[in-house]
Image (tube, rainbow, N blue to C red; front, side):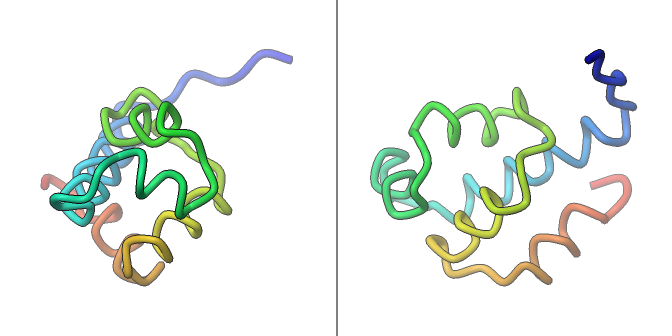
Length: 83
């Protein structure tokens, strides 16, 4: 199965998600937040750096819960154009 390449807008949206998650993590370690969300620290690193711009829904939901963010906040932030 061949995956369709992401558009520049999709990549930018993924980068915005990563920046928001990194800011929400604050002083907490990547390992701590990843463990609380039930994902690997490497997965969180890839999301935060934009190397995984389209993480699975349940991964995002688990991170939102671990970071005390609502899905509405995440969706709103990631949908903003030109940020």
